[in-house]
Amino acid sequence: MFSYVWPIALVVLSNIVYQICAKSVPGGLNPFAALAVTYSVGAAASVILYYALNKNADIFKEFGNLNWAPFVLGFVIVGLEVGFIYAYKAGWTVSTASLVQGSVLAAALIFVGWLLFKEEITWNKLVGVAICLVGLFFINYKF
Image (tube, rainbow, N blue to C red; front, side, top):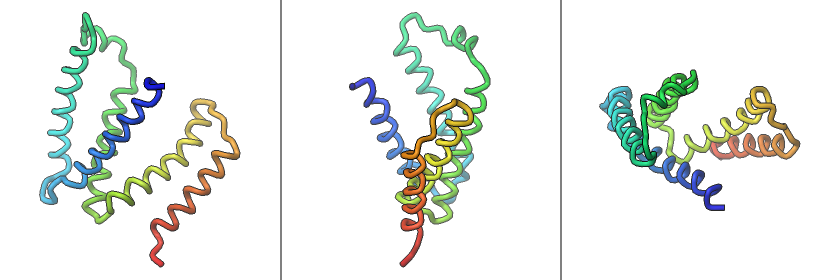
């Protein structure tokens, strides 16, 4: 059970801190300069953790297992990061920006999962998407 729950708990905790940090990037700082520092720290942390958590580690040997995904992921992560930074600079609130993107993302991924990974689309998932869309209306509509 722990091995099932801890990764999601880590994602949630990391995402909370991530949103706080993205919202706290100084207004006068270019987002790409901020990301250069962010990724330098991330690269250093990744190398340190790789060697700390792997006995007989050989990162260059690992690189032989690479495919296209880590390279594309690097570009996509920049889009995610800079998108949130610009959203906050444009006036989005932490609670709303994350919730809106998360709901739209969840709905889109149902169809991505079906198209690319042959995951099943169930009525429960479709009703969940509809509920998310109704929730987005209420979150963004000013009564």
